[in-house]
Length: 491
Ligand code: ADP
Ligand code: MG
Image (cartoon, rainbow, N blue to C red; front, side, top):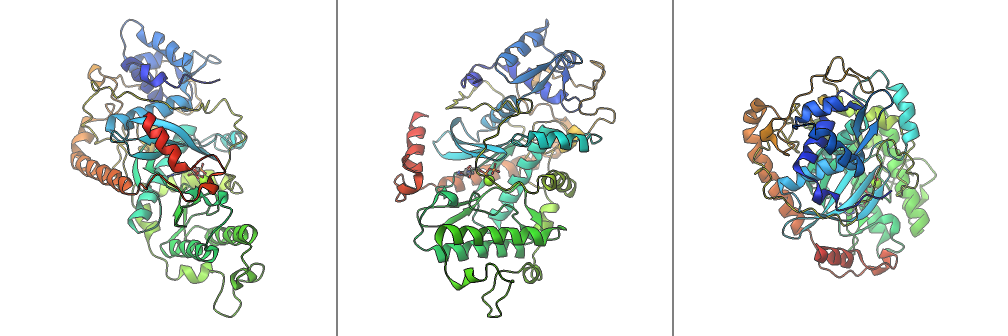
């Protein structure tokens, strides 16, 4: 079933208000009682119920009357909330075509007001492996925090924090622009996943560069954990960009050595198979770590000695130790799950109702709030997140905040502490924050604005000319660049 992709254009303030109310209700309810939604949204004359019907029609919410009359967000509803927030912030103005489908994500092009094309990654944890999630749900039954929104938001927050830190330390990664809920905005990489590349001019150099990156990462205290041909982008000049960071771990992780070796092994295998690398490097492939000649396969133990502290910096930043542990629990369960680069078993209606958003165009509503209150928003700024409302990638406590509320628990309608949206809130989904928080974070607001501008400018600087020398890498579908250009024109 396909959504009218233009739905977002026609959604009213009340629609967003009610959608936000459902999101808030999901802090404590897997299925939010309709009365609670009504109470949070605070629309007059039973308006909430009418709006809910509209949201349901557009598949932004799912109706569940099993235990009581209730609703929950679909992934699409969650997408729209994140998109709306980011558009209001001025991060981008329109959404274009889908450019990637990851194991647990969808990637779209988005364009800023001035036409800069960026990449938007929507995390979809629990989508491709919903059966696994179900079993995890049993395993995690007692943990209030387990929730697909929560996990997806954690993944986005982590990805954003890591991408930003890696970029700041000179690693070739996309520029981290912004993040909200389960959505990360980054610069668009002008290249192709290595897996699509059949030929390289200098496979030895590329191989060395890639291995060097794994080692340098470990020297900085980090292991990618999914370092393979699907997560390495390469451009016409054979320049490498690494993507996809939610699964990264510290070198102090108990399985660090195994993850490190696995990353190295993936690269050896791929280059051997695809480029038939016959250099002495590859002769070590099946053997031990060292051939006694000094030209050895990178060894985790020797790297670790010089380990830096990026992992500690990150642990002290926006992505906290607790969140790392939460993610790792999920990742560990999924340990074998290496990137397949495609998502072919999208079976689980129940979680996401993931619907393609084709050429979705959002008309910026200039009557929207001036969006001056960034204080409570998520950002890449460490330790700055508001715990008050649920609109950000951070503030993860929101799903755990009620001592009595457990996901899936059917509370009596209206029993919950659902906070009513004030009328001034309008559809500003940042408006759910606490005033005190706002003041406290006023300085942060400035920083965030600066950072965003810088990031967008940096992303801008990375754009490359339209033509691509590597048309063959595009599998005959026309070059990536030309497609982007065409699309950008439409916008
Ligand atoms: P997942 O975590 O689901 O594997 P990825 O981050 O690896 O998602 O992205 C999936 C695909 O989307 C990539 O293989 C790549 O083709 C595309 N992609 C992701 N990020 C970007 C980007 N910044 N620029 C261009 N393409 C991207
Ligand atoms: Mg990937």
